[in-house]
Length: 508
Image 1 (cartoon, rainbow, N blue to C red):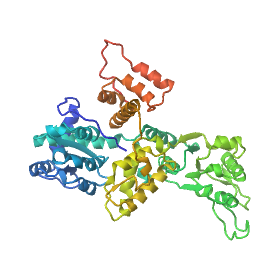
Image 2: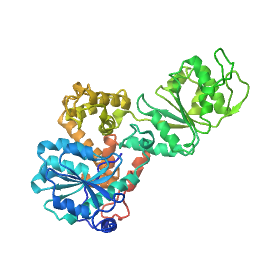
Image 3: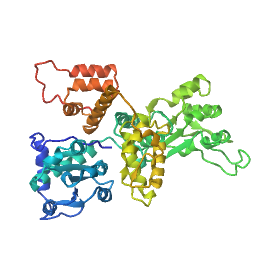
Image 4: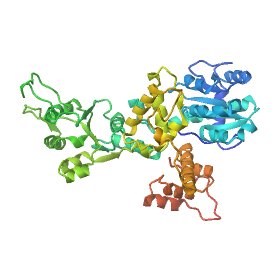
């Protein structure tokens, strides 16, 4: 969940302490030459014609150098769980190869440094790639020592970003809960907050948004993480069996009950019980669940013993429970017991560039489904994914990408492979609409690149922080609450007054 990092200055004196730390780290290998593999820093060098002298110099400085001569080789050499520095020689690639190269530059665990000659730097496409995906760039020819310093800085920053990120639910679920948009960052912050309490949590969101992943992430970050996490889909179990599934039964309770069965609630003792699709719970089961929540005890079907059970309840549904309560289909007192803390899952269509990020994540995970080596997504596929409404959310995206991996005829997945061909046609828009869309996209990219550090994003865009706040509100990129407006006013500085160097932005 890492954003593309900002373009730093080679000659800047800021951050001298970090430069010194990086330089010392680079100058103290365990011995002359390449250090042991356990301490070696990995560096990926991408060039059509690699510079052998540069490779040898980097190896002598303690780097474990991997050389890729094409965009295709990058994906083969990079391991998903390994962070590394990267050098990409823009001057050695033809213009027609830049789209495939861009797909490789999106690798989130690589800190890229670009090499380019003045002619290539004049190309807008190259400038965009450097601006969006690289920590820094240098004009060639350049001294090897300079490159060594720059890749050391990029390597340090890429690892620093890992330490600075919020806990990633994918680390425990190995699933599709990734994202960089503000809505997902807010979700991750909410998960951290509610995980440390024992109150009931209600997760609301459309079908396919990943509500169970959120519930599991809350459990794994709670004091109950060593105890069971027991999920039950209330809509998938027949109503006449749900009571016994929840609370269990004694031997002889009914025909066919040949032995005692422990229910899901009792099985989760000490841990977390996740009630998915709670809106489908029948009224009689609602009454039993409410009694358990009030007393903390259950009775097995056919039994007379009250059994104390200590569980935390997390529930979720795509049903409008407020409407269900008005219609008499859901008990209001049960809703207030379940919805002590509320978590709202954002739909996929509201997650902006996360759609493309998720698509690449899914592609990397299921790439082995096909014998053909899929390199990435064609521009038509990216366009179609942004234009499509995604009523099935992340679940639908997974299904479409997995099907496309198998059915694709070329090495790039197209809109046709995703069955979204009719969403890839360019839509007619006015000049004003085009300007507005470009402005919004530029703000999104700047915020993503600078991890929502508003001062840095505003500087990159060439506007003031107050103007950036206003434009974010105009384009729906922030919550325009009274608190936010007050924050903006408090950040305004009277003309003619100096701003303290300590007045830096700390928002993420």
